[in-house]
Image (tube, rainbow, N blue to C red; front, side):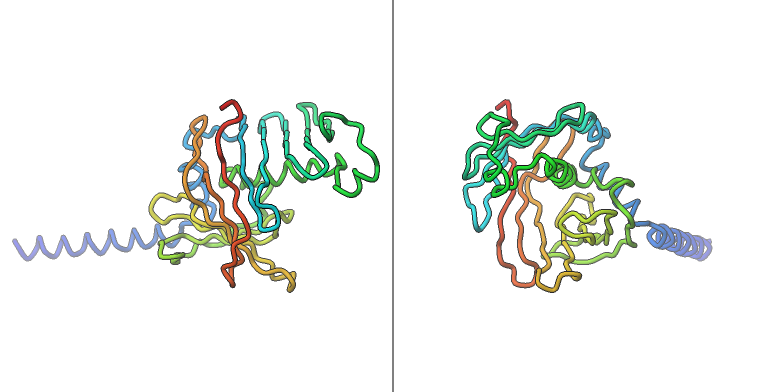
Length: 246
């Protein structure tokens, strides 16, 4: 009888082992990404959220850059306020989709200033796309943005066990080809690489995510540190300081 139990136990372990392997083998990149979205936005609030934050954005060439960002994902409203050399620049897309740029509170901007500092309202859509995609990760990686998601790979990044997802965007944002790394245990975002293979003069870049910023049931990284991948040279950071009403 004991031998029968041992035999049955062994058979069950083999069956469950094959089942686990089959499940692992059939897990797609899309499924892994959806688990990450569930981790960061368990109640599915991103498509109906109102994000309004202060951001410090130090760069090597501008260590004091600071922005105020407001985005309403449902209506498409967008407002970015930044103090720059010519003054305070406001880029706005209202709830009806109308775009304008204000300099020190005025829509009247001299042509030479507008050209020198690239203050055309036609650039507002690009700014909105960038901030919506980058600050909405991973929820912003939707079917209308993503062309293809590769098969997930198990790898090690900076000593952390991760899933690596190769993602190709329909329209380039910094790069057309991304590699998103997600924690293998809880699917939280660890890092994001930008592949610049099509531009030999531009080194690949990597963003390291850290910390948590929570609002309306959503959790996104508070810190985003930018580096050149090969050299490890630091390029800058994006830091969520607090909400605009604080």
